[in-house]
Length: 335
Image (tube, rainbow, N blue to C red; front, side, top):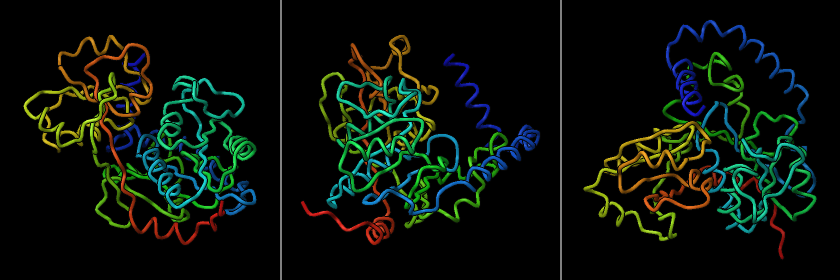
């Protein structure tokens, strides 16, 4: 099943980001998607129709697949906490067991029960996180049980019934909008004109200082022991080795390239997005060091392979975004 999912993802990327005749054949279906998107958007509440006393900021995507939305949300959440705001998060909990009523992430939850991204956000920010397919229901559940000033929605740009005050779209600066077509002929969830209506557009790996952001590696954590090593020491230790980099990200090549540009020699293993690294997959690797991401690590449990190291990253948001946000944020409640 993993091999099949990987083949499907590669095939779709070839159609969406190449000059494929298959894309043209799928255009009639894209017209149906366009009609449905317009029908649902016409019923959506206007911006600002959020519950009294709370601001809702959606960090979403216009394209299918990973663009860095969750790391951006975590970085934004930390900045808001530093500014003194009480932050809460809502998320779908993709591929989790939480398929019914909205539920808040609890200390004993794992990635299988609430999803890898919500669990990662909860651990990184230590704020209330509610998961549920119905984002409006998740918002109400979050507000009912927590004192929150600002709600961050992990994805949810196309959940039109979710009221919101601000929208931030995250794109991949290198892949852009692909062939510019709607699903299934292209990677777009909404027409490209939607970008004119959002408040900010951020692009990973963009040279534009007002839109661009990058991942910066701060260190690596030995997963079995928890030992954290600064990145300069990691480079000194691993510089002469051939390592294995393994991940189940939506765009694994981003992770691999980030490592090779640091001068590391890596053999790469990519799994379908959101998959779990299995012991049998690790047994087939001869390298003494295996590098993975935090999103991969959050899904692992039980006995941990001693070769696994988690690459720790940080996101530096554009100064123009933080300045613009600062002017729009509500007055802080003094406690």
